[in-house]
Image 1: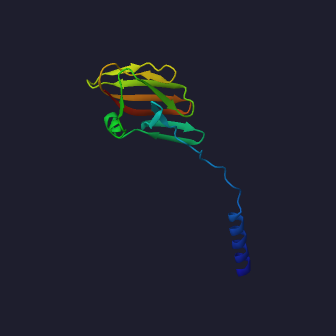
Image 2 (image 1 turned 90 degrees about the vertical axis):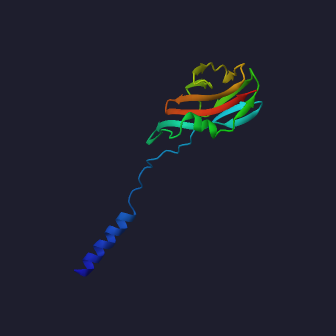
Image 3 (image 1 turned 135 degrees about the horizontal axis):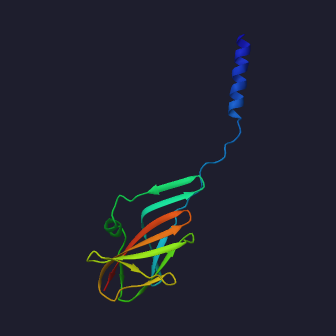
Length: 148
C-alpha cells in the first residue's frame, strides 16, 4: 500500500513539473519617447498622463503632478523670438496636438507643420503640452521654454 501511494505521488509530481508551457500573457512594452529639438540639440520631454492597450498588456497612469511640476522637472530651453522647434515622437503616432500654456494662464492651440512649431515673438516663459495618440493609446508630454 505504501509503495502504491509513493508511486502515485512520484507520478503526480513528474506530471506536474512537465506540464505544457503556458503562452505568455504579457507584451514587451516600450514607452514611446518624445523629444524637442532646438538647434540640432534634443531634449527628452517629461511624460504626464498615459494610457496604453496592446494585446494582453494594458496600462494607465494619471500623473500625480500637475503640468507646472512636470515643466519644473524639465530643463527649460532658452530660445529666441520666432525660433522653430521640432517635435519628434517615436512609434509613428496617428495624432499630435500641441497646446501652449502662457504666463497669464491662457492656453492656446499651436499649429504643428512638418513636426515643427514656430515660437511666439513675445519674450516670456511658456509651457507646452504635447498630446499624442496612437491606435493603442495616448501619452501627454510636457516641456517648457524661455524666450529672450
